[in-house]
Length: 204
Image 1 (cartoon, rainbow, N blue to C red):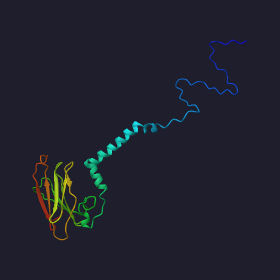
Image 2 (cartoon, one colour; image 1 turned 90 degrees about the vertical axis):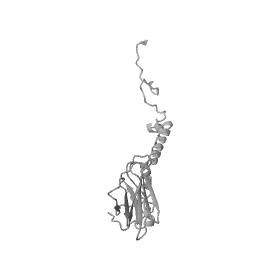
Image 3 (cartoon, rainbow, N blue to C red; image 1 turned 30 degrees about the vertical axis):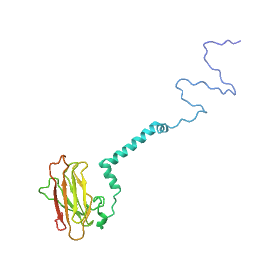
């Protein structure tokens, strides 16, 4: 007769048909065959409150980009593709840079009495003019008017430069007036002033 030793912790070998398993010890993360598979970490992260917070952050970033001057400039660029060179009427009101009209444009820029560095640009190919200032401040405006035609105005949103969209000029003779208009109470110290040019101006 065999007597069991109280201090004996050994396990008897499993016999045929014995499907029992040893209980998992601390730290044992193994799964039994019947356990459902664990979802990937990213599925857990993209569900519930985390997904909502992520979506809100993305939408907020997009809205912020759109409402800033830079975002506005990007949107204008996307929706103002080249379509007008060779057709002045089609150029009216469009961005001269996006339309490629600045490539062949001549410039009239007085050197004296021109604190905002106001200039008029004329593209013969696009049959249009526009005005630009390069030494202004946020809130300052630049305008361009064609006698018998339209007027365009642009305002500096940031930095020191801004240009208007184009105004069509007629074939033959034309007269155009550009003005620099400081923001009331702004940083600029110059007063409103204007320059004029015609088709006969020495465009450079």
